[in-house]
Image (cartoon, rainbow, N blue to C red; front, top):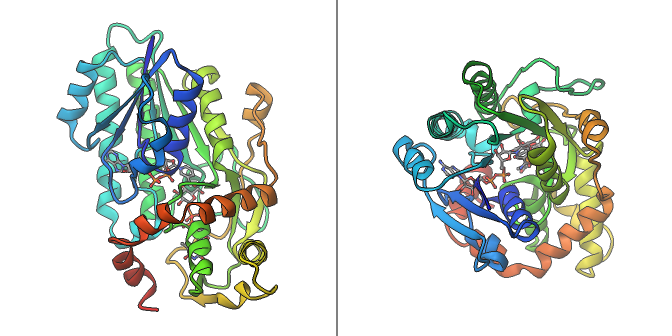
Length: 350
Ligand code: NAD
Ligand code: DAU
């Protein structure tokens, strides 16, 4: 039996990865390590919480002692490291949390793995989950490949870039068996409603303004979260030691056209006359240092490991809307607490 440590498993992407591994690999013991910050939610894992091969550990990756103890307690074969502060806007108002968790926390895990695996690295794997934002911002043309130079522009992306460099340094210096992937924007169920898509779905449902930064001309490359989880599964098992793989949907949308598409779906689902939801679109002050465009070339992953996205965006977006509308209680529980304070500090009182 293999023991796999998944960090950040109570978050958006982490919960999809945990669910996939718990269900698909009954022979693996899956340990979900999460601090349960505002973004961590055990309700995301209700359906698998009693499975015999699943265990939850509440811990903070910034605490080096806790990480060493964990590696002493369990004989860990592999790490899939997703725990992070993940929201760009929060990194602009409070960068230090990002430095602690994303940089110091990652190094604590690397050290714990290095010490514990010292004599037996051969069948081990440390998989670091990163983002396309480390590559910076594209103009109207171009695409990020695995060899694009790093050029992070927000405290969030700079902290992720820093952690990527450290993970690679541990490969070269200590021969730690690492692999890294850099993925584009994810969407789907269980995403915290601070991110564009779930925030907009929730606001449309409640007839609140949809805040669009600047003119809505920024472009993101969207990937269904379960396709990311499938890529993570593949890279964890078949990715080459020391390598980096880009993951993306080949699916670029300006924010404004994405929101217009979402408004059409919402009108249909809520039985509102066409055009009702789009009236909620409100242009607000732009994000500081707002990256213009991301686009990911995932041909290495497709050609070498045979991955490809399974869903068309329109289909994935509709599925996503259906999920949020069917899971009102999940959304209400999240938006009833500190979320209001965050919302007012980010968008003002509305
Ligand atoms: P999320 O914010 O939804 O979840 C992060 C999880 O990490 C939460 O459960 C939180 O409680 C936990 N966590 C935070 N600080 C911690 C700490 N100090 N110790 C232990 N646990 C802690 O994030 P997400 O969107 O699911 O992103 C997961 C990972 O994927 C991140 O590393 C992010 O950089 C990366 N990523 C995200 C996207 C995206 O579109 N969301 C795209 C590419 C890469
Ligand atoms: O590219 C991968 C990254 O995607 C991940 O590494 C991050 O963890 C994840 O949060 C995401 O970052 P973005 O900043 O691209 O995602 P967000 O949903 O915050 O914003 C998407 C776009 O929408 C971006 O151009 C900013 C814009 N936006 C966002 C919000 C929250 C708005 O116009 N209005 C908003 O209220």
